[in-house]
Image (cartoon, rainbow, N blue to C red; front, side, top):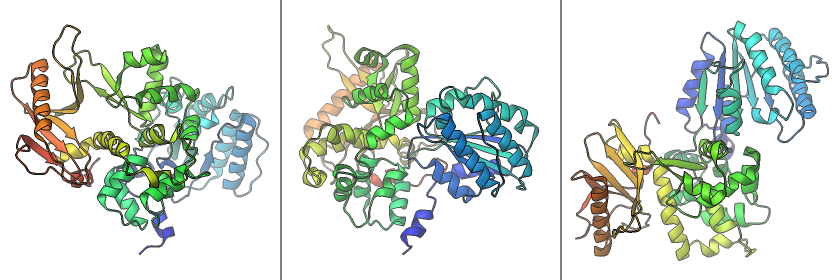
Length: 487
């Protein structure tokens, strides 16, 4: 078995991202790479492993530090990468980039890799960082063909506004955009196995419901503890590594973090999701400000936006999708028990079973490529959406909702049911009748005569019985854990 140190050094997954970095390094032009993704998702780790911590220059922004501190740190980095060469005091970002130019002109590296980590933190109020970065690129880098600059940051709103949508010296200069997503289940399983865990797929599914596919959270788990013991050690024990993660997470990413927290707190109250108008009414936020907040939350993988099936107005449903945040609102915020073994004492409660049920739906929605692959329709044109019918006051019909509808080019429509169960899921007579009634409602409302079929996703499959024959297709944990190429 590999030692813990050897296991910790291995890069799990990220094949496509590494190919993108390799392409940039081997090109014959200067490259500007923007890398973004949720905090804790492993952006820095990916760059460090790919380049083996070997750069022509590397600088990390300091969180909530004033300009003078940022510039002093920048000067110290120049001295370090210049092998002790003296650098005069730096008073502003214009001088900082001028000194960087002089350093790179002396640098003997054939391809000069510059890694700016947590770049949004460098742009303090009134610092002129962005304008000087524009000037540096437009007036020095563009005349060279040997620069690879990696701009990395978790504050995706800044990355988009200041870099991707830049109308100044960086306009149309970005050559690569790399989005780093959380791990899928297959990558989580590989990571845990590499680190000495012997959990089965069901336990890993439960782990995913708590921590999602966030590599940093996985790195805190200990193989000699059970999953409930790990949760207590990290979250419920006083001073645990994740005991204050919620406040740090949103505060580090967003200015006016309280507004973002108000939105995700609202979304946590209804698993079916909220329309934009419903969010406006509940929070009082509207216009471009709300649009930016929703976009930023989606880019950070905290929420997901779903179109509504058959809705020509393209109204979007927003759902909370960050697993840690979901768990926090349900079991951490407002918990005054002071029980440092809380999860060990409660993980078998009936309320937890209910929470696992709707959280499993989020796991499935996060693994939509795996569901399509398992159904054998990866190469087929499809449309995936949610469906919700709210009858008018004078409409005698009951409402209905399907959290995942997959419409195929061959006219087959999958009405997907997602059920979490430790045993093969048993369909009762009453449940069969409810599903058939909902299918009839769906067909009536949508004006569809044929095409909809029932598809189930459940860890252990469907128990065979007299009420299961109407199921068209079913997927299990094996399908969710599949290692799918090119995703």
